[in-house]
Image (cartoon, rainbow, N blue to C red; front, side, top):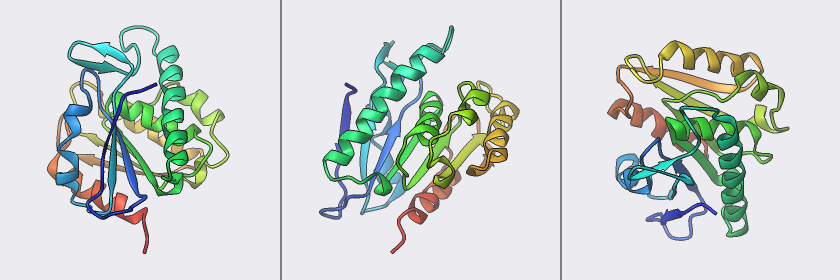
Amino acid sequence: MLKTYLIPAAQADSQRVLVMLHGLGDSIQGYLWLPEALRLPWLNYLLVNAPTPYFDGGSWYDFEGDMVPGVRRSRALLFQVLDELRAKGFPTEQTTFGGFSQGCVMTMEVGCRYPHRLAGVVGISGYLCEPQTLVKELSPVAREQRFLVTHGRWDPLLPLERAKGHIALLQAAGLNVTWREFDKDHTIAADELGVIREFVQAGYPG
């Protein structure tokens, strides 16, 4: 089981939730600022810790060796998180799933493979695990999902062109992916938050 932390929406009884995954070496603590930054009073936030300790935080998979076993394990654990949310009254179609860096990798895995449609999928500064395999193993609802993927033009850790190529594969496979580039390095920029906010809002019409 993964450790999670729910930040309730200011609006009582809201079933709308954003699940947010951190990057390598970070933790739940690294995203406590997100509700204030996005300013969406009707949105609950579920922050999730990666399963493997890494210095003061956690890791979703082995970034130095074979990433596939860790990605598969973390994906199964994140499916459990979504299943538990459904059982607690947070419908998947009211759930947005997002993540940064390693968290982006896991977000794209979940968005492409989870068998229920989400309100939206937000991948920030990441890439895909085995992209050619992924497009062959899409869930039955993957082409109904809404994806926003953002990346920095100056990212020194994860080159822009690699990520851009991965997203092109998803788009060619018929996925609804919006790609946005920002003048930033490996971080989350202020103008990027505005784009994410608009995307999240669009997933909850009415």
